[in-house]
Amino acid sequence: MPEAEDKKNNIVNTLKSKSVLKQKVYDITFSTFTLLKEILKDLTKEINLDIAGIDQRVKLEFTDRGQFDAQIKVAGDILLFSMHSNIFQFDRDHPVWRTPYVQKDKFNAYAGIIYIYNFLADSFKYNRLDDLGYLIARIFINHEKQYFVEGKRQMGMFYTNFGNEEINRESLQRIILTAIQYSLEFDLLVPPYDTVKIATVGQAEAKIQHSKIITGKRVGFQFNSDDVLVANTNKP
View 1 (cartoon, rainbow, N blue to C red):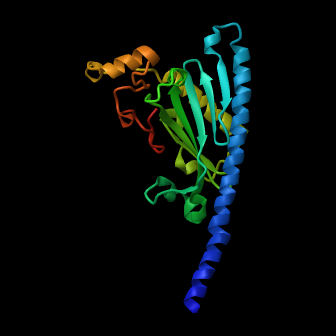
View 2 (cartoon, helix red, strand yellow):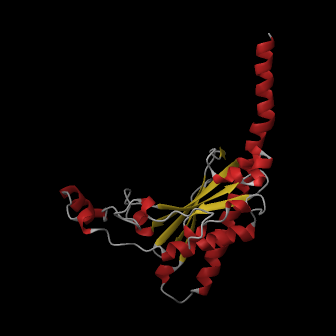
């Protein structure tokens, strides 16, 4: 049965190439995420020493939330770092396909992802499950430890850097510090009057009991109304 033999050979070849590659990307992404956790813990200690004697409410707090999640509380903000357990390939319209690095080898376009979200600390403190958080960056890492960051404003880097920069402690620390700075400058805005002028009895009761009126740093606005960085533009 030549056809069945061909199919079996295709399966074996795919397992030897693509599947092995994805496992390697996963291992590298996971080790990078483990390193990221260590950096978060170290930064928490260092910054807390620098602000010792100031208001205790603004100190940093690191929390390991499990295998794929970690968070750092910075004053009234929480930055949640989350690694996806799966490996992805970029869609065909993504600018990364136009880089010489990916054009040279399509397997370079398989990447693990680490997400960075910004939430209000009070959203967790008061269990406001409907509150909003915002994705401020995502880190892509491939089988050669090459990486780039997609993100908001100063969080992003050029796709053309992909293939020229390896992820390491220094680059991770730079990303984390930029994310912290961005979250501190990303202020909570007063919602438009018309979006909050009517409330239900249930909302009022929830507000009294648990402060559960929906809140987020761009409350009242769609996320895409805030400028999303396109890495090959000159937006600040």
